[in-house]
Image (cartoon, rainbow, N blue to C red; front, side):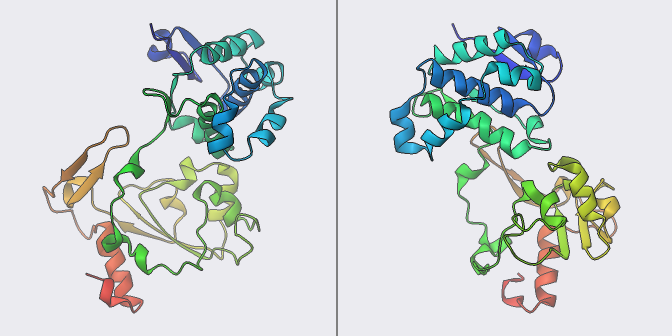
Length: 288
């Protein structure tokens, strides 16, 4: 039958149900993934034909992993060499493996790299085309909804840069690469996220938000860590206080969420704030 492997930073109820439970150091998932891929290449379980067709730079990846085996990863992850070898062997013997990648391990200093490394395991194995195999983090992009009416994405000037949110700390502290060689970020409107708490490199993120020359407006329901660092906090409606459509993060259904009650005081929904800003910025034709 199927084998269940659970990787986490503490022994929880799910870990207790696993055939193999790997309790590693927080933020070290990427090192574990590198060691696993090292073993897959070493032991002949890497699907090179698949990678040649569908992966970027597989040769460079293999060369990069040459020195990143279980002995290298063991002190980083806190796992034993035998544990890492056992996990890699389990994967190598079962090409039709499904990796359910959670959110927690991305909320670290090197969270984006952790996710990239973990999701690459399925590519090295060539398991993506197999039914019930591959890797899954979030399927919010499958719906391909045309949300131009709410985001005005069709009006965006393509010459304007898009900052990588996983590198917001570097961007706000002047890293030229994160800023794509452009000028510093001097103003932000933040909705639906709490970057001071969840973005990688939290120390850098806090330093960036503390800049005297950065104007921050947070549209929120609670006084979050990010809201506490804002120049202006605008009250936002809760999900029962506005109409909305919800995409599933782990299923394939769209759900209608109708407004049930009026929001208190001057709370406003995201779209209202966008429209009022557009009116004041001279793009009233989209402020409907």
